[in-house]
Image 1 (spheres, rainbow, N blue to C red):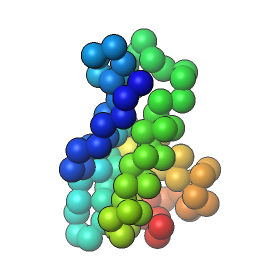
Image 2 (cartoon, rainbow, N blue to C red; image 1 turned 90 degrees about the vertical axis):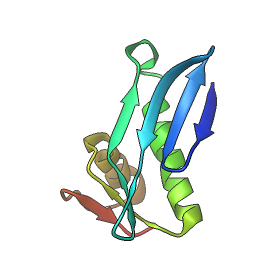
Image 3 (cartoon, rainbow, N blue to C red; image 1 turned 135 degrees about the vertical axis):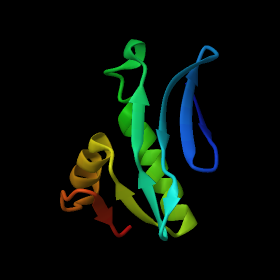
Image 4 (tube, rainbow, N blue to C red; image 1 turned 60 degrees about the horizontal axis):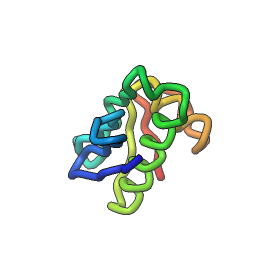
Length: 93
């Protein structure tokens, strides 16, 4: 699988087919993870977790703050970064 980073999106390609994506547009000085998607054929392989991990690392690299309105990303941040579950979630990283 190949992970590709664009300005505010990371997606994964398998055999020339997009298998999933995470989007994180910038808003008010934060990057908001607002969408995580994995095609049904690739679910259960840890792709969503990897996409969110890469998005958080990219946001850290940019020196930004992360927020999440996507429920999957909110749970991931609570479990992996110790952020308090709020809606929307705002997590200093």
